Length: 265
Image (cartoon, rainbow, N blue to C red; front, side, top):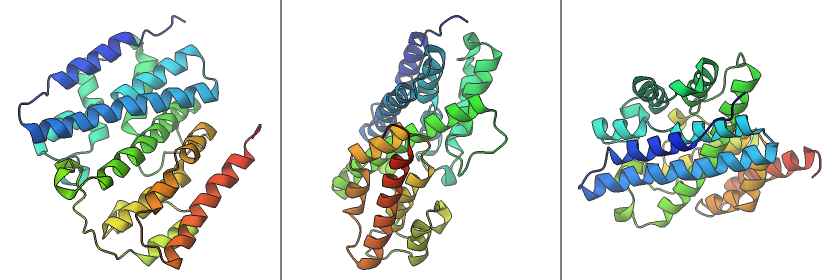
């Protein structure tokens, strides 16, 4: 099997981003946010692939999937001025549609092209279908982990900005009030994921992001959560009452247990 040359896909992605360039400062800031996010997701995916010891072929596919997973964000923003799928379109499905229309993956061969499109389409679903073949499941899990790892970074940086300086399309439209949903704390303690439909406040969204830890798939991902202090940074912005602290401790303990279960740790 010939090695996959990733360079044309890197060049295509850069050109695709440039095709959406705009002199409108606020719009360009939102688009830049997604381009930078993609670069970080790519870096995360490569780090996960290296930690898993993937061969050259699968490492290249992991990079391509990460590079292209969010291309739908650009036409989404152009057409709807939002990154909220609930107010526009499913950006993952749109990403696959863009790649098909541009024939971006034609040189990969049918099998790898289908794998890349499937992994991209599934990168934002609540849970992966159990019917996936092992190789597609591997790549879908890599991009999902890599994506979450950078969304934590992006969200932390956005929270640190004054409200007026936050990219407008990244705003969640949730009130920044002290309240939070007790049922979400219960889900955290039960080590369950949280659905977007249950959110009422920005604190609820922070708790939802903590619950993403339960959906991580690989030891390299868990180690990055630990090394980057993801739980501590996110929980520091939450109310400091006993119920919240208990739920956060449950998340932190889960990470410790998962890492300890891995061979060689």
